[in-house]
Length: 178
Image 1 (cartoon, rainbow, N blue to C red):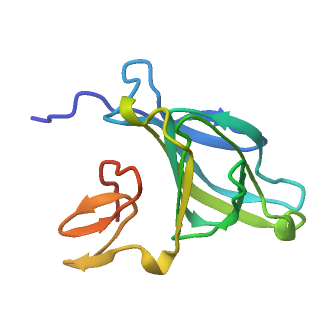
Image 2: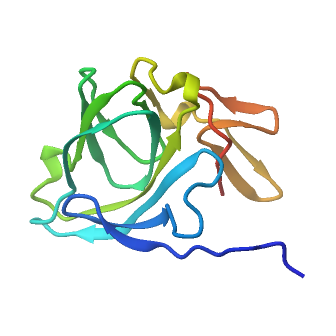
């Protein structure tokens, strides 16, 4: 007997010249814990004329965690942050009372063949943090807790698990990738 009540299939969603597989929200399940959206980007191969182009847009009352397996995204925001998101690093943007940002293919690879594969997880902030000041945190791949158990490699990209932690100003439930 299974304790699984619902299996959610990802559905196509256009995020600005790029399709993602969106898991949440779902008609029967608007959120899972604090998770409001879960977008699976790719895996995609893009030619010299295809690029990720999510134009400048606002966020309020939530955080987004971006983690790439492959490819590169240029993140720019109203805090003055301009950083390239690369595979294995974690980017955590907390909108709080408001932030404006864009996500695009970095200029140096816009006219080349490229790949993109990753996750963007949107986390609803607790009521008491919804009007907090916006922040942006970048954690390099080499600073991400990782370990092996019985031949399985783990990386902890948010929260705490097994006496390991990666703490941000806002700590989400743990997300394990194996």
